[in-house]
Amino acid sequence: MNKVRTMEEMPLSGFHFKMFAYTGGSAFLDGYIIGIIAVALSVMQLQFNMSLTVMGLIGTATLVGMFVGGMIGGYITDLIGRKTMFIIDLLVMALASILQFFIDDPMQLVVLRFILGIAVGADYPIAGTLMAEFSPKKNRGALLGGLVGLWYIGYAISYLIGYFMLSIGDASWRWMLLSSAIPALILLFARLNMPESPRWLANKGKEKEANAIVRKIFGEEVIMSEEPETKEKTTFLDMFRNGYGKWMLFVAVFWSLQVVPTFAIGTYIPEILAQFGFANGTREYLGSAVINIVYLAGLIPALYFVEKYGRRPTLIWPFLVSSITLFVMGATSGLNLSFALILVLFIVYGTFNTGMGIHQWIYPNELFPTHIRGTAMGFATGISRIASSIGTFFFPSFLAHYGLAATMYVCGALFFIGFLVSLFMAPETKNMSLTQASSINKFSSLKQDSFTSNKTIN
Image 1 (cartoon, rainbow, N blue to C red):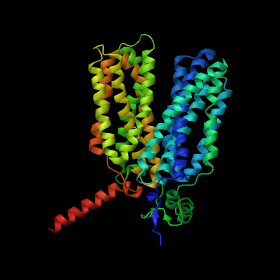
Image 2 (cartoon, helix red, strand yellow; image 1 turned 90 degrees about the horizontal axis):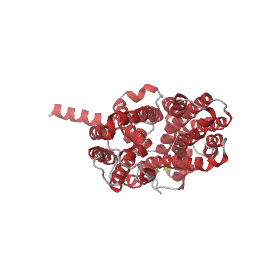
Image 3 (cartoon, rainbow, N blue to C red; image 1 turned 180 degrees about the horizontal axis):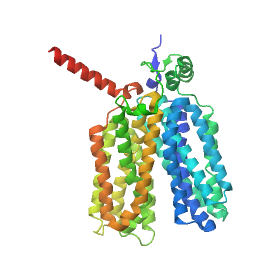
Image 4 (cartoon, rainbow, N blue to C red; image 1 turned 180 degrees about the vertical axis):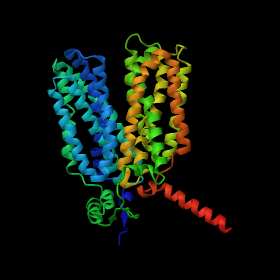
């Protein structure tokens, strides 16, 4: 008789990569939608003669929408199901993308970009929960972390599409904004064939349906989990109760501390390189291109190390290395270092910083149980987007008023605080089942109770 195995013990298969493609579309669309607006605005502003305020509203509407979408989307996902929300979300995304083509007033675009942001923000918690709930425990970190790479791919492709569409002429911006409907519709039709999460079904008391999905995908001798899925009602505030508030604080803080310098520096890399003394010619743009390529390349070793060495070291030490690198940049900003040396410092910073970014998808999906997994991921996504928008907004003003050295010191200090937070708070969830990872508080309490009882008896 064959040994019964759980779906978390199954080896990587074509099904897992198919789920990665389904869920990775969320990160891809996020990068694409945020990137394409920058190119479209360069053409659009000439036709509408928009003020800086209106342009700022268009640029930030998506981020504000993502905050709202993350906050409510994850909660609704836990209530009505992963697949259902995945379909509704993409319908909204595709429709809003199409409607952008027909606007005749910039404020209409502000509204549509806000709606797009809601849809993208809601897609994050759905994607993360589905990928986590279907992943083998030995590969879950790499699969979740790999989703980050698709954001960079979407962002890069949006600039290429926008560049080639410039030749269309005055109406090119309409086609650029419409173009996000194409990947949204492709992903929508692909997701129609995907299964619902067995863990979510079991949590809602539908064990028979959950087990049928597991057997259909993995075989008759495979079960969902050795640990029974608890049937708990989804309540928004549960992510702050029963010890989960500590994990929510940890996730929200480390994620925000990581993205504030990342988005700020990433947005203004050419200006930063110019202040290092490379404003002549095209070297600052060459440097920007190389740096952004390295951002993506930095994920490759991180996806290996997160499974070999664990979550804690691959978050803690990159925070420290990124911090030290920025401190060095600040200290040497007035020394006229060579272009190659500055580029090396940025490459070191970019490699480690992007590598630790994979934990944005890993920790929130591992530390919370099924009934609030989407809620927690959505809340953390919303907080991080507000933090990143604030950092990006104030960065150029701070750089102008206080100079390059002070700016690098502040960014380095934020990373150093992230290092301390991670050092004292980051748990290790490597090779744990989802039930074990989301029950660390309970296990700790049981150990403490046992220790206290033994001490009393002795």
